[in-house]
Length: 298
Image 1 (cartoon, rainbow, N blue to C red):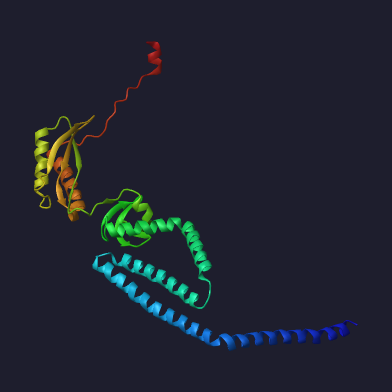
Image 2 (tube, rainbow, N blue to C red):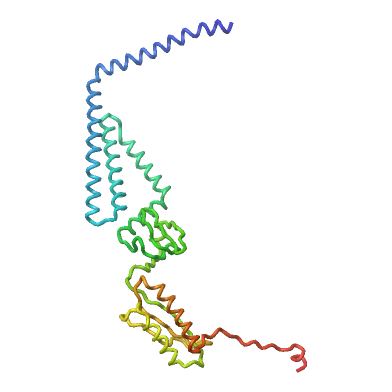
């Protein structure tokens, strides 16, 4: 019985499908007969708008890139901004193309705007890093090769990108620091100035000849060719400490000579103290030990 029912229903379904296909084809044929020329014209115009718009977009993005290079904007930032200009213009070209085809672009633009807002909220931190990267590239508080301390770390700047800065520590460890962390805090650029001052604190004993110690320290500083005469180096008594008389030794050197000069001066001062019998006092403490039984007897 079921086979009979299915056999009876199958031809009806096939006939309905054929009627549906025929109706669709007739509708399409009537539309092409009445609106075919108009449709072809719109398609050609839409294609023309897209091609011309893309060509103009390429020209404008390259022109913007050239203008930023003439204004001496960093190459990375110039390329990135040129890409943004290109993307915005292409969106406008696509909307104009769809509008030529008769598609309502108002709702589409609203959807794009809402999607852009949602993406902006989702990537709020990333956009903050981008804005900070633009500021760092424009105002240049540091350059590639500078030794800086920023964002809670320190190292030599190897690369400045839009979203992050790449540093290399003295022991050759690569560090990636988000630009937002750098721009929102204090930046210490140790390579910005051509000269630096070395600050040493040297202590001698209270029984040492103070004038002889000072004369020796001045001799060590003036005997190093890397020490600059202008500004003049300073050797002075800075503090009468608990166990030592402390001198400040402050010579100026070229930035590239900072560490080698500091290390050499420290070594020469120690060796000179040993040769001349000057003391470098250690912190001392007197301990008084009382016998508990004797205290009780007293």
